Length: 237
Image (cartoon, rainbow, N blue to C red; front, top):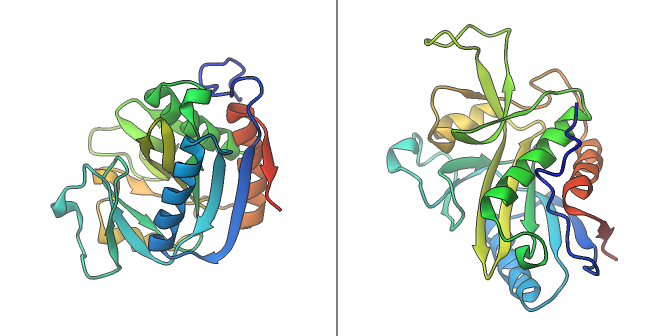
């Protein structure tokens, strides 16, 4: 069941214009994505309209501000980019929906932890619409799926896999970077890193869970979930 309270609401102030919703087809080079975010964040900080930008990347690894070098298991497998977002190492590649979320929290709620929880709630709502139960964990950022069909962990607890990662950065209270949701990436590509520094749990995707969904179908649900938490969006012309 979806939550009905306002715990994770980040609705904007009255009079705030709808968030621009942009989808780019094809594989976007990571350097191009960062340059675009830098430009957009400057515009938003100066009063421009907020933006959510959906992309896919070619295979690559990114290192957040807390990345530990030992977690880069195969440094020559794919390009590695140091990035200013929070978190550790993560993978991006085809079949993974990356959502770059550029919002002005001064127009909403100046609370970074609440913003991260709201992003997790967007993913959980998106998964719920596809009959997948996503869960948050107090000691691990991201969204997790229990795997009762897998062997128990060494401590006797149920196995669970990560289906969505989060990493954010703020500048003048404007957010950038965001979340990645595994739709149908090559899960073997995660083997070149210790994803988010967590080795006790695995990584999964919607297709790995038995849902042969198309990216466009996921995008529709993602937008519906985003609007429930963050408010109205508008497509760009």
